[in-house]
Image (cartoon, rainbow, N blue to C red):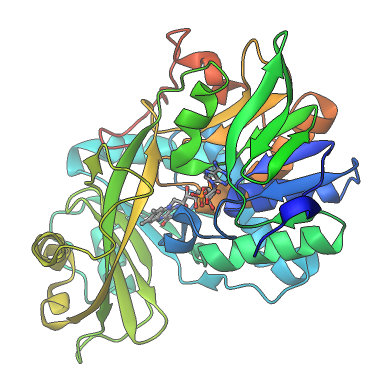
Length: 394
Ligand SMILES: Cc1cc2nc3c(=O)[nH]c(=O)nc-3n(C[C@H](O)[C@H](O)[C@H](O)COP(=O)(O)OP(=O)(O)OC[C@H]3O[C@@H](n4cnc5c(N)ncnc54)[C@H](O)[C@@H]3O)c2cc1C
């Protein structure tokens, strides 16, 4: 699709990137009718990390504002039709967090903190876990956190739904349009340059996932985002597996997993490879790496051993030094906002991120959840986020 001369020359707000974040920001801004909003993507909606996401939805975080963002988002996932006007893909399977046995005390403190923030979560013993998931081998587990209301969703679906509702509300979407530079002078953003021409705008949001660092370097600001390559396996359930079941993040096997419908199962890895080019990474997963990861997951679910690998999914995380997102205005560059660095965890908080970014843009401050800790300058200030009861692999 080509825009040629049809690309608008001005906008009030330009959002670069039509992943779950850009689409959610557009949707939430459009509710408040703040003028002419453009969403630009070099490819198409959901074509970045969003369309490859394992899309686990859980509330278990060690940093309270992340818990709050997840809680606000879960409510949206649960009421997708009322809020967004589409059926939605949220699957409530329940979720279990397993930590290293020597971190059980932290798990307990984090669960107390989460309960205080309204999360439906409880600590369960090994015996209760075995009852909940009879197929799991849980001999070394002391305690686990169980969230009955959590589950998983669909990244491409969420990005599509948010964007199409935003378009109904008047937002303009320009796919296949690459932003090649941002225009600024006197410490103020003036707009963007795309491969179809210039667009002047007083506010620009870069929601560009693993492409964000060069985008902000272009505006003279270096954000410490590093790209990390990850692989996910989709398996056909082994004949003896009952299907369904809880999603899980398991520090002991360094894997996460969930059902994928009734007949499939998804396994993902804690480990990835740094330094990958988001425009040129292997699209085909490595059989050896998948096998090694599945072997680890088999220590938790022995029946997976006989499960056939149907396909691999590959994708890129945008990692920050503290594995938390970067949200806010770029210091010294009025009007340029960043919303990136989700470190492989953004899907589940995307509804709330759109809301708080819209508040930040229109009200000068995020009201629903305090996001000041996520400010872009925190690394330069030597203040990365460190949660009180952080896990070693948080
Ligand atoms: C394999 C994998 C598994 C994951 N699993 C989970 C999970 O279980 N739970 C969870 O919560 N999160 C998970 N995540 C993370 C989550 O999917 C991401 O944090 C989230 O999708 C990021 O969305 P985004 O909108 O920030 O970025 P993206 O979806 O990457 O979107 C960025 C967009 O910007 C566009 N763009 C970039 N540069 C330009 C430019 N110059 N001009 C125009 N457009 C541009 C791209 O085309 C792209 O569409 C996973 C991610 C991956 C890769």
